[in-house]
Structure formats: C-alpha cells, structure tokens
Image 1 (tube, rainbow, N blue to C red):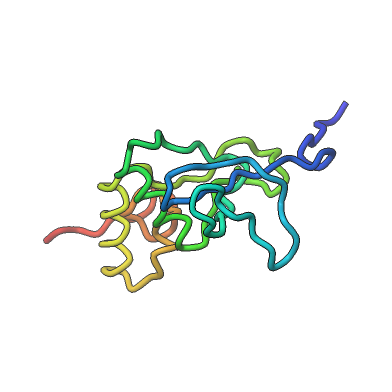
Image 2 (image 1 turned 135 degrees about the horizontal axis):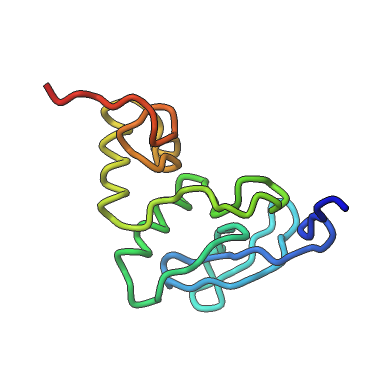
Length: 136
C-alpha cells in the first residue's frame, strides 16, 4: 500500500510568530490579504510555516535570527509542500550562522534569502558538497 499524505487530507494550523513580542501561535491560514493580529501588541503575525520550533522567549539572540529569516520571506517548512518529505529545510539558528550567510551574500552578490537556505555558507549551490573558495 502507498504512502498517505496526512497534510493533504487535513487542514493543519500553521505557526505564526510576532518577533517583536517573541511569541508564536498556531493558527489556520487566514484569507488572502488578511493577517492574524498579535494578541500582545496588535501587529500582524508572520506565518512561520508548519515546522517552526520557536526559541524560548528569553532567547533574544535566537529571536533576532528568526526575525531575519522571516523578514526575508522564508518559512520553516519540510522539503515537500505537502509535508511528505519530513526533513525540514535548513534555516540558520544562531547569530554566527546568520552573520556567515550575510557575508556570503555580500561576497557572492546574492540576495540574503538565497544564502539563508544554504547549510554551508561557503558553497554556491546550496549543498555542503559544493566547491569552496580558496583563501589565497
């Protein structure tokens, strides 16, 4: 018997985050052009995807990384849109990882959103087995 896609059969709630308040909530996807407001500050919540794992509220540094990732229009999702490929895509978790990808974006002349999805900031193809720049 074949694999059953549970995301396709049910309408799962998505994670929505307010990076200013450092909180997240699970909500159903709102209609086009409609945003869920943050219950704390009233600003629109940003959709963080199905696989978002929020850092602790007191971890200001981790939330600054989340704000950069979400600010570039990226979400925390698995490889396939329906959730069948349960391995989540890479997203930086620390400020050092974010800083390395910002430097790579400047060095390579790429948008930050492209370097944020790379597991290895020194590669140009999005995989860690790609060619590395020499320092000489």
